[in-house]
Image 1 (cartoon, helix red, strand yellow):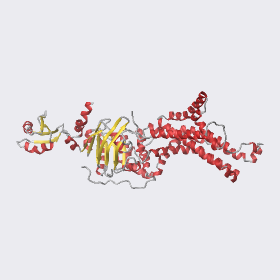
Image 2 (cartoon, helix red, strand yellow; image 1 turned 180 degrees about the vertical axis):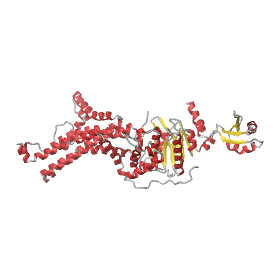
Image 3 (cartoon, helix red, strand yellow; image 1 turned 30 degrees about the vertical axis):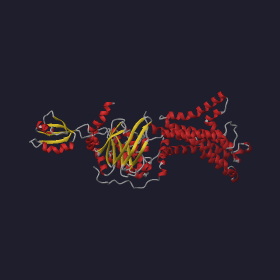
Image 4 (cartoon, chains in turn red, purple; image 1 turned 135 degrees about the vertical axis):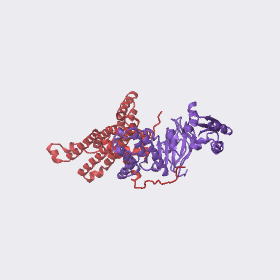
Length: 286
Length: 314
């Protein structure tokens, strides 16, 4: 027997809290994203429309400006559910593009480089890996969706006063909830599809393809079968239905709200299943 | 399964669909250097992945010093794993690679830096620490993989073919490192194809073939238990013919062959211990014995006897 002495001593120094370990991965994720100038410019560009909206809210309440250009205040569109519904459509679409760009950047290199055993031979679980990666996407998507939305709501409230704010508090809830649900679904789609395609550009194209293919097939099904069920695979229709419901703005959509919720739940579960299947510390070579 | 000093596998099987990874493996691995030996596809990497929780067993139970591998937070404080395949994040230097992965252990930036420097120094890569891994040679990549496995000072080291690609000098240094870790009371589990090195470094071996453990224990013990292959003993002496005549009188001796150079005898016996005991009496008749050594009491022979036959029959 070669072992006589047990002189080994474990590391006993301080450690960061276990719950915060996923942030290590998030930090490296942000570094990877911000290293790409195109993405940085795109994220900044995504804030253009909220800026326009903020300018509109301010100027539409500025009598001097309205008088200068002789614009009657009562003929300007109100800042209400309809306003935020269109805000959600614009920012939701940009969020989709951002997901297609960022999702593959975060995940595909790990699979292409076979990094999974490296991550999982640390005190680090699959759940923490997903949390680390998805938190980057959720943070970036939040920055261009519900956070500027809430800022717009705050600007409007500060101008209109307390009574407007309390009377329209549901709008703030709809902004946060409606866009948060959307970006969670997007982040799951982005991660799940990126995990299955090791090629970054291919993964991005696949993420984009989901929405276009869904819309195309949905329309084709509706035309050929003379039904409305095709809308269920059209993610844009699903999102518009939910937002029109949350912002109390009737768009005349034929899809029921409950169907839209079910579609989102099914998509999310499918993405989680894909992630569970793919995010493993080893790869079975067949 | 509350064995806190050994790595235990209790009737563990792992199947990849219909493909057998390992089957009905029951082991208890104490501290020291344990080598996993076997042909390609014998289940060495699967066994290592099972010990580290990267693969879950289809059946059976595993415990690493009393910890279940399904608890990575606890397990990987004790375990360091160097996988067989190279996978390095792009664009990182050796130091950044080690330091960044130390953050997953909960070390602060400063502590990670200190531990990373220490680990890199242990594998002799200090001069190349600031170079990008992509520019490393095969041997340097092996060493940086080793450094990432030891950086958090684990008690159990699982190293999948750690000697591949190392030049003889670094090989010797790495083996010395393994010995030092083992002497500190750590578990060092190594898989290797280089059998003479396994012989040199191992306290015990686990011989695998086709997903089954065919032998485990200290080499000498394993060799003694292989009954169908008589032990070969090489005797250097001045009168091999006379000695051959004497040894043939023993019932446990099955063959004796005078060496081509006439300077010794190769004896095959079914009871090596008895032969050694009797050798002094056998050599009384003015036979000058210069050296006695087992000729096939090594991993290579054990591998040939237990695995070679199966490989040949496949």
